[in-house]
Image 1 (cartoon, helix red, strand yellow):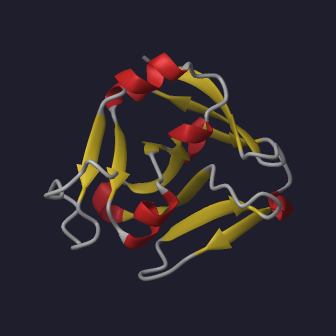
Image 2 (image 1 turned 90 degrees about the vertical axis):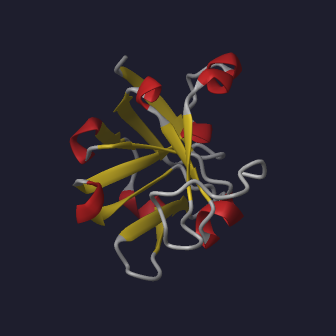
Length: 134
């Protein structure tokens, strides 16, 4: 079910609203950056995302193919979302960090469907052999 969520970083400088159907699934990846950040994402289209703060408060990190922008708060360092363009997953996207949603109950989080991706081996379509740490 589509619902509008509010999200933010730890200090509150980065704020957004996003229309997300979390029952459609969330994802965890074992690639180098996702595993180090413990990132838990839900992908949406850019028109379902509304940034509600100054762009200048956001840092931007890119690596590898430079197709993804890993955004973070310049003050507290938390990564509340990212965005990019990857043709293989449907083009432009915004990835919401589920852990940064402010108006979701802890019990709801435990019920969310999670798909695991083997980004470490560039085999995104596979589930990694080990997922307990993700």
